[in-house]
Length: 278
Ligand SMILES: CC(=O)Oc1ccc2c(C)cc(=O)oc2c1
Image (cartoon, rainbow, N blue to C red; front, side, top):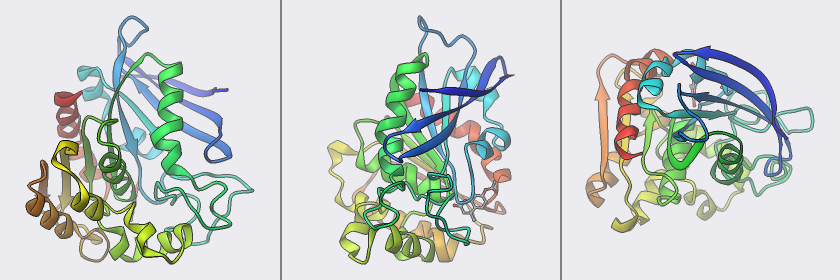
């Protein structure tokens, strides 16, 4: 059962927030949706799913990205889920890069995380089914995200190339099995067997992709991003893209950092990229 908790008119459309009891994460989840002007049962619109990064909720992108005007113009709905299960019964951690706010979009296999931390199933299956049942949207979907959410968007698109028409990412963690954020989260959520980690790693998934499963990707990365070298490792994906001749555009930007100032500078281009495929 969906509970509407806010409705705000913006750019001629509507920004709304909802909570619902999720069966994949066994807790109350919150998401936000932007519906462009004119979206109705007789004029259904495609959806861009947005996955946010560490510490974020459904609110960061909606409040800071400045995406509504372009999404309204192009007739694209945007759905932004939370970044993890939440609540008093959900295991947490004091650090910013693990636990609540840091679900890494995987299905955890390790206790105590495996009850609630099933963000992969939530984003790939449960949320789209809910959105398509309750809102005036088509089943055409693109997926995008930032940092941990960029990892989520690329990884989910590479694993589900028929479900999404295109994927894009700002400052994504492209090779989580080889960076401190990913190693920490994956060892707790997935255990010590690194074979399980590879199933959620964009570089590894792209290496295994067949040309018939290729989908258009766009990545934007700031060169002044403090996390680029140690955590994001864009270069590792660039090597696989070239090796596989994968249709991925990787744009490096002098001077930009890891923040929403960067995202807001290029979000219109990402929406136009998805619009060409939706
Ligand atoms: C709103 C905002 O600034 O979000 C934000 C800040 C930092 C990070 C980092 C360091 C990693 C990440 O995955 O997401 C993220 C999001």
